[in-house]
Length: 252
Image (cartoon, rainbow, N blue to C red; front, top):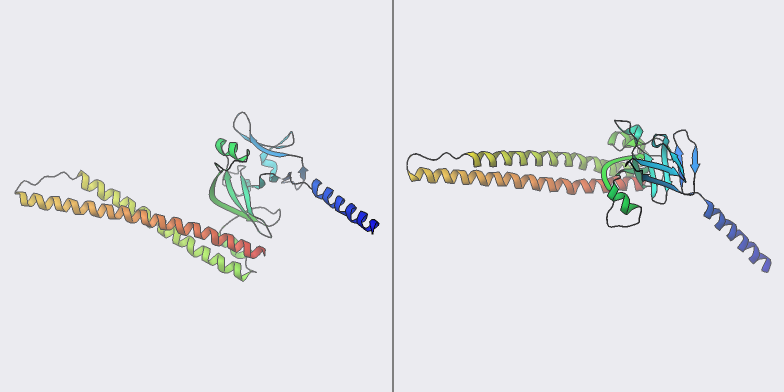
């Protein structure tokens, strides 16, 4: 019995040691080589340029495909950017399909992000990418995802909902912009129309009423534009959740 306990304890110790030394800080290069490190940092230097280091060794950003550290897992978007410049997106969903979202690093975000404060989060825009394993990133769009999610009917249904909401968002934002512009033009046109009537106060009263009606129409157009814009924002947030659900379903 004592021997069995000793064996179990030894196995537990070996497993714990293996987990302790399992690297969670490393840099994966475009050359497919891996640099393991005790600490991987991504920090601005004295000139404000962001630099990546494996322990004390500086690694040029353009050579880095992925890096992992205590703050997360990041992918270089250089090959999917128009300017071929290095920038890093953070993995937000991990599995057979990984989903990444652009992170815009700045001084304020850096201060809070790396000092573990939740007061200010890094700015995140809506450019998203995905991949499988350590493959190259692809842009998140219907054409790419339709091909890669084709073998999962549930994910495809969610993807189709995402596409419909994307189209609806585009229509709402376009209509909102047109309404706001029309309202502003109408408002300025009415305000600049200072022509006064030359005959009779009754005609002046009609002019005043006409201007009041024009102002009302301007406010209605502006209000419609704001309402359509808010509707677009709501659907935009909803479509992002549909996309995440499609990835999660595929990864089950």
